[in-house]
Image (cartoon, rainbow, N blue to C red; front, top):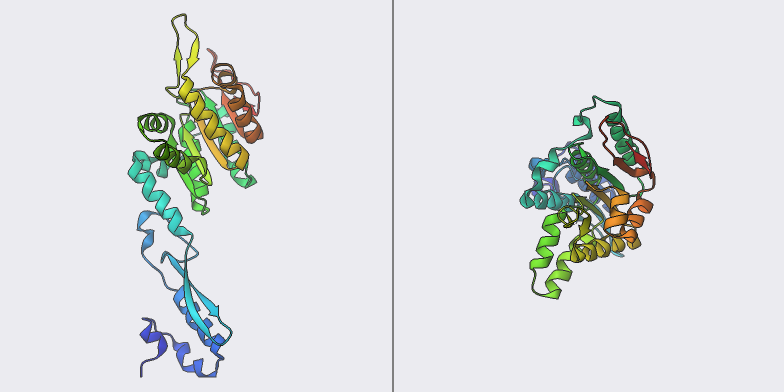
Length: 282
């Protein structure tokens, strides 16, 4: 008769001594054997230390009259789903962004990197925002933070603002619109890239003017995540004052409040002179 471990596809020298173990100890032995195995799910680039890339974890299951082995799905399956969805959404390149790759040549860039690392070390439910100067590495910093949180088994969704708003506007039925909106409004961690891009235009006299429908979407999304204290990461070309003055004061206030010290605003002048304000302004 084959040993139990062979029937399960494993072999171990400890089989010979199992006869001296209690039923619970025997089950625990084979649970440990299974949990020591490695799977091949890390082909997607995510290396799970919990299940060793199998997608499941063996556990001891106790009933009043017997003890047996059971399995439970690993949290990494949700992470892998998020990675798969990000790649399919065309944002797969963001998964390659790392804080270690952020180039620091000027003092202001040191402050950007320092604040990003401080945010990750805080392990809080605060929001993180990088606003202002185009081409300053906002997307790289934000996506690197999102990726770090993804590797911590957080459920993360990536969103480009223009794609989000345009898709909502194209939907014919309220039920479809609500379902799509809730994918982003209720996820554990949301990264909004280029927030309000395309939502603000210049009128005939040169003043900034926001699209009223987009403002409604912005408030609903930010307000729901604010009320539920769900972590939100934001990159945008618009500063807090811009959002307050030209979009919605409530949206600006909620972002600033939830970010606390982690609102990094990069304001550019002709001398590349940056200063701090409302969190951190460089």
